[in-house]
Image (cartoon, rainbow, N blue to C red; front, side, top):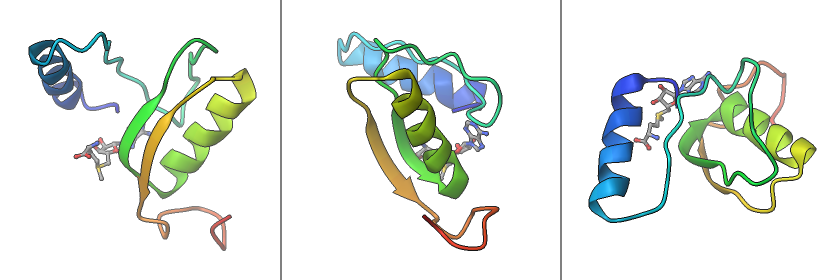
Length: 81
Ligand SMILES: C[S@@+](CC[C@H](N)C(=O)[O-])C[C@H]1O[C@@H](n2cnc3c(N)ncnc32)[C@H](O)[C@@H]1O
């Protein structure tokens, strides 16, 4: 997520529930600092956002990720793959 307000509210929710999660601001279409030990989480990630996150997490070898894709039409390619 790259909206600071959503990062903050997500972190507040995780903290309230005692979850050991750190919410990082990240433009997923820019240079991304995902490490193999990270567990990327994306809820309602539109089109190219979830495709790119899958490619990045796969490329660095993340052992797990949680992804709820949406808006399959919001892509720059002619067709969704
Ligand atoms: C459909 S909303 C989902 C928001 C929230 N995760 C939820 O489930 O309610 C898509 C989100 O993608 C974020 N977004 C758009 N472009 C992005 C980018 N390049 N990198 C990271 N997040 C982005 C928007 O700020 C928006 O909050």
